[in-house]
Image (tube, rainbow, N blue to C red; front, side, top):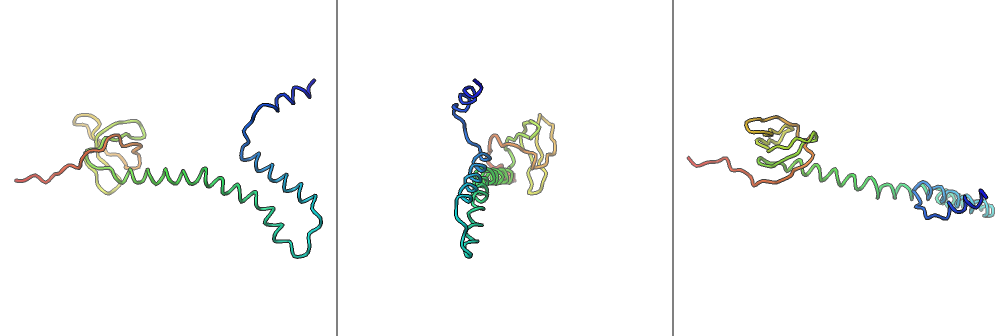
Length: 142
C-alpha cells in the first residue's frame, strides 16, 4: 500500500522550481551524453557548450526575474529621493510622517513633524513621498 499512497501524492499538481528545472536539465543532458556515441576529435567545443547551456539558462532566468526588477526599483527610489522639494509630505523608514521645510542638494532634509518641531533627516531614510506640493516661491516683492 505505500506505493499507492506515494503515487497519489505525486499525482497532485506541482509547480517546478528553478532548482528542479536545473536538475532536470542536468539529468537530461547526462542521459543524452551517455546515449551518444563517442564524439569525433573536433567536437569538443560543442560538448562544452551543450553542458554549460543549463547554467547559462539559469543565469538568464535569474537576471530577468531578480536582478533586473531590483535595479528598476533602486532607480525609482533614487529618482524619488532626488525629487524631494520643500512642502512635500514624506514618510521616514521609522514611520514618522512630516512636511519638508528645508531641502538642499546635500544629504540632510529638515522635516516638520509637529507644529514648531523640526528634525533633520538623512535623505536616504525617506521611504515614501505621500504628496507632492507645488514649489514654494521665497522671493517676495519688497
